[in-house]
Image (cartoon, rainbow over all chains, first blue to last red; front, side, top):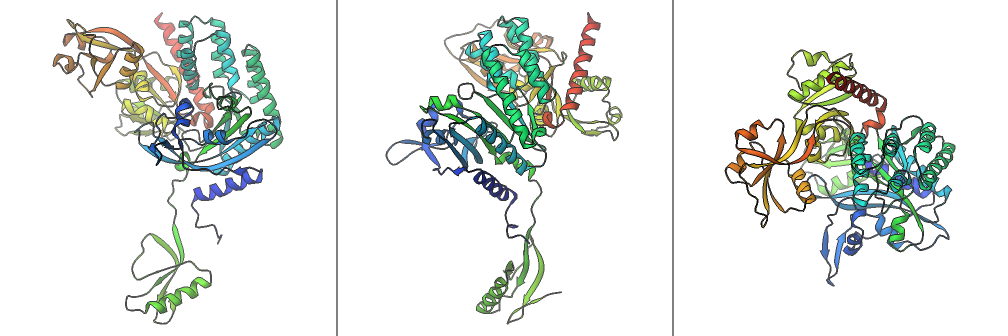
Length: 371
Length: 213
């Protein structure tokens, strides 16, 4: 019997992931449960929900239970690109549920690379994302995209801020019919509209999609984006995991914060993305750091649907004594069983929820097995 | 096996016929069975019959891989799903209606009775009109008649119910029709099958549109 058998699936997963990240030289980022409220107020749109649990501390300063970890990590990051800081975290975040607006404590685990995130480091982060998914489930895929593709097209069409948001919303739903209607209403040419529609409905192998994408996009920014994706994909091929990688140009992330490569991870049996990540140089700049930022988070609460089967709580020996027995003698007898390395549940009653491999009864001196 | 969520009732029947036409039939559906989950042992799909307003919820949470739902339900629920196709039927409009002789007092918030608070709030915010939403679950037309609200925001198909209750459409808010939706994760693991259905549905709709012309 493994010494770790008492761990829940989630605890075991967290240990496995920590081992993975430490093995790549990532250091755990220590942090408090709360931050100054102002941090979240200034970066409201970076958060998935605007609701933040706030409170006033002893000095009258408004504080918040953190709804996000990335912002705190960026805040404490060094400036400059001399080196790359590789960090990981396991933290609870506090977020309002989008459906019932009640706050939930969500366990999040993630990796952030800050500083000089070069081509190798980019590949390594995506590799870690793939490995993280593999630790969770044997059927997984990682969807990859690049913010520059749709952003490039939107720049070419000179769309205003509100329209861009609407376009992004429709792209994330792969909603081609309404996207066409909206672009026509905004006076975008039919040719450009076809390019947008073509991009979000592309299918095929990664290589085929990259070739087709290169034909569909216009402008330097978008072409650079295709090149970056090509580079990343050819780098990742070295890892023999490329069958897990898909391209999906409908991934939506906020352009104010994200630029470059973005990705989402899916597991068979989990209805939503369980992993989300990307390059956030814009966020770094916004927070006054002249450095690159690239990372991802894994939402442990989204894995709940995978851990549906109730776990059998088990024990080696159910040791029964009666109320009249001498407590000191029972203690000594239990100790001798524990000294043999056995898991013992001593009781004078019933334990219906516990599975025991063997049943013992106290005979006044020691425990003896009951047939 | 693909799970398809269909709205119970007229729209659901129409959608099933369309699926049957493209080769995804299910004998159990035609037996007049009153079961809510209908499986065909040899078929590639099984159908779940659910309340129209719940279709998107089943799909979002992955209990169904794909589904067909009205745009009104989708907008009100704000569900995180892929909206792959406008099926072009179940056509109606979301509109603001008021008693025929209604005069709006712009000095105070407009009282709006509706089943669709989210759509109403978004619409009036877009035209900078302050409102007070009264959420009702049915017989919306009663609200302005009894003075519960000034106007209503509701689905209008032919306008007959409105007329019978002395109401008139004041403003059209949105066109509504049935949409083909898919769960985001299902799209990753069952993409070929979902795409096949999407393409065949699109072709069937085009054909129908051609016939009408």
